[in-house]
Image (tube, rainbow, N blue to C red; front, side, top):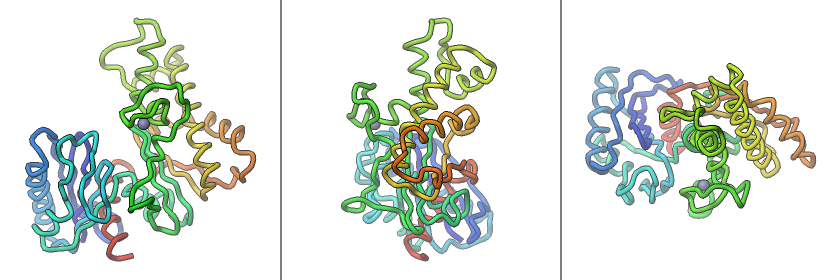
Length: 306
Ligand SMILES: [Zn+2]
């Protein structure tokens, strides 16, 4: 039984996951970034202990997925945009010492990618790229079941590769990176900048735009067309660079995948003639909202049991 922790900018989830990737119990709390890292760790320890009690198990290890950049070797947090002031905090040391078991951490996209590779839509694929599209774009490259790491063990930022150098400025410092053009918030920004004022409201979201597009609303339809195009360009680049056996697509935007997939395939066909793009299976993530916890547990197995 593995204790699983998923640290995001909005909430922290904790739970117990069994050896078949099933979530036996779970709890969550707001991340509450301003109260600091130590406070968040106290809450996480409480939640993990409660979950273990509720499932009547003792934990063999603890796996952590955390919004990046994180150091998967040392277990410490980098300068994470969404976790201001937490840099240098080490959830691996903290949780390992508290529970007396080994712990390991990866970037949350790598954690989710590992979960889909072992239990989900990427099962059996030797070369897999997992992409999650929601408030940001995260990606994980998994080769023969192992997370691909860059220099010094870093997590390459596929979601921030530049697509249009004259595009919008991203918090990563680049203009026109994939996330700045094709994340959920970029759909809202595009409507806000281009559509008549009557199309915009403070509660507009990518989800609302997708629903409006399905009803045939003209500007929402255009926003979806633009989104599909930029998703397609980024994925075509992934196909050209890696030509993996499969690309698994997850994240909130993909709940409306039917609006995007035809155009994505069309852009890949246009852009990837030099590689056997037809051999790259594009499928949807299959593990649902628990993918973060299942992935965190898989992080532990990736470090200690594989
Ligand atoms: Zn960026």
